[in-house]
Image (tube, rainbow, N blue to C red; front, side, top):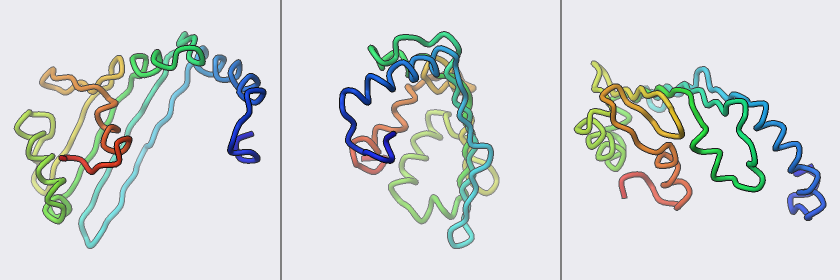
Length: 145
């Protein structure tokens, strides 16, 4: 529907709303099993699973119920060289290491967290809202600023 007409009319929204309600009420999962890329011999790897559990209802009337319902897990690895090549990224990673949310490995850094009630939950028990990962993108600014 959206592909054929990127600006949706109220009638289109009225058709989609019950379908969205059904999708969320039944629950679903979205996963990235292996995202891996190299730039100039430096690498980034990531895998994650996001799940909206069965019974998540009223999302078309109140979209704020979605984020607290999300659960799953996330793992990411970035090589030391990739971090060194991006000073702003290095600053953010250093802060996460100090907070014990990212672990320094032999040749890079690893983030490993569960996702519960819309929050990243780290092994040390610290929690940060999942939306915090997306705020720099939503605000159009790089991380660390």
